[in-house]
Amino acid sequence: MNHFETLEFYTILSKLSDCAVSAVAKERCLSIEPATTIEEATRLLSQTTEARKIMEQAGSPPIAVMSDLEKIITLLKADAMLTPDNIGNVVQFLASCTRLKSYLKRAEATGADIAFYGNSMIDLSDLEDEINRCLHNGRIDDRATSNLHDIRRGIERKGEQIKTKIEALVKTNREYCAEGFAAKRNGRYTMPVLKKYKNKVSGTLVEMSNTGETYYIEPSAVSKLQNELDMLLIEEDNEVRTILYTLTAMIDDNLTSIKINMEAMEVLDFVFAKAKLSISMKATEIRLTEERDIRLLSAKHPLLGQSSMPPVPLDFALGNSTRGIVITGPNTGGKTVAIKTVGLLSLMTQSGLHIPADKSSSMCVFDNVWCDIGDGQSISQNLSTFSSHMTNIIDVLGRVTPNSLVLFDELGSGTDPAEGMGIATAILEELLASDCLFTVTTHYPEIKEFATRTEGVINARMAFDRESLMPLYKLEIGEAGESCALHIAQRLGMPEHLLERARKITYSGIDTPSISAKPIENTIVTVTPLELKAEPEKDTTPSRSQSFNIGDSVTVYPQKEIGIVYQRANSVGEIGVQVKGKKKLVNHKRIKLKVAASELYPDDYDMSIVFDTVENRKASHLMGKRHVEGNTVIIKEGK
Image 1: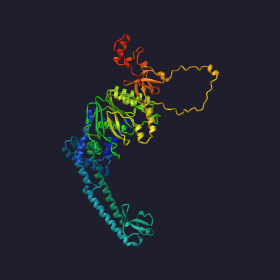
Image 2: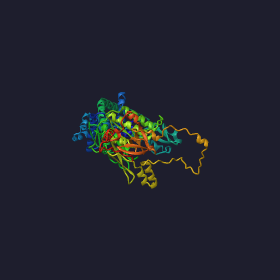
Image 3: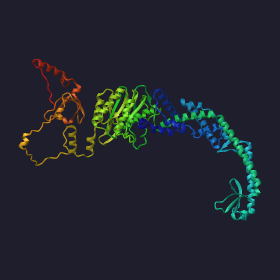
């Protein structure tokens, strides 16, 4: 499983990339990896903070696109002549450099170190001015050189002479022409002659109309003038090429400086992209701490801000004496969003990105953030949901270190509840042994009890409104969640007799009738003498109620409480179980063996040590020796 993808870190990087302008900066945004040292993470965060400070005071920076500069550099290396479009792209970049240097010069008043980055950019205003003098609207300007100016004036005059000569011919031969004026076709002045008169006009056919009814002929009378115009056009092309080669050489001479400015522009583009994302998310820089500690106040998932219902702020604390949090609560209550928020904000902070949380929040730096969240079923590998989760969790357990953050969603789900609970408990014990920080979500009551009795682990729950039957999406640390199924069923209109039956089955251990059992009515059983003589073979297999022994560790359902058997089954199949210091009788069908007494205690172990008080044991010992006035042994009956 790709943990960054699961936590939607790549989605954040995509949004960051959209804030960048240049292709290089966009690619850099998409390839960010979280820092693993507090020094590096602090440096990256400071960059973002300074860039945002500058933007808030000076506006958006004038960053150039630079999309064609790499192509232009390749042409220069091949000694090719740059076209006017190529040179136009270069001068646009040079203009952006000038504007950016001016922008950063003004930003120096903020005191931000990044503002002084503009001093590393080289002033290329002379090259910019020369290109602007020679190039105008994507074309070499007439005044780029005096020779080009004279040539183009000659071309203009010669064209007017040709046009005037042809219009005189058109006027003289009006009956031959489709129009009463000269027409320019393929850069040449022509007479628009009707097809039937094409042989009446001496000259060169330049073009035909779409219908074929008009022939555009260059008259022989203007051939000399046209040849003179052609020569001028050749001179113009040669002069323009000379100017383009000159500008190309100037750009090539400054190529090293241009590359330096490009690199500076790309770095600034990347840094200001982080500031733009911070502003768009209304985020802030939080404090990094060397302690193993997370403190998030009013934190929000950055990808939930666009929904119609604003996200509920998350307050979250983990670390120091608390190494793990077990979150419980109803489905759709926000448990998954809560742990994804913690993981995503951790990755963002270590990547130098601001997060949507109160600025008084703090976070340590992890060597990695591991998670198992969501369905994760692999169709290509034919893995079930449970198998897929376990494959991922086993991989995480093999990689986790004391400096890792681990996030597991619905731990132990997707299989038999009893086995799932055992697996979940074992995983939590392994996480504790690894000394990492972790947060898990679960529905198992035993896991809540595990958190209650285990040092370093605490419970948390997602709040639920019992009146509206709606989740509140608010995390409450220090309290375990409770099942709301019966309450929800009651609010939704389940009949009272069904609710009462459900309560008895759940909390009183009343056996439910078998669905397949049918009452036997009007049945007569006849016993023959032969049957009386043949006694059936007795079943030597002990009943289930008799399989439990004193000292067995058992689970009592439906509460799933852990207890110890203090009394074997009575005549009605009730077994004495001590739970949390209290003794009670429980129907054997509500009990499941957890660990046999033979595995817990030696053969001659005095079980009174487990079940009796010190005073009772002393009194019993004394009573066995002699009579002592006032000596009393208290025997508690099972309830």
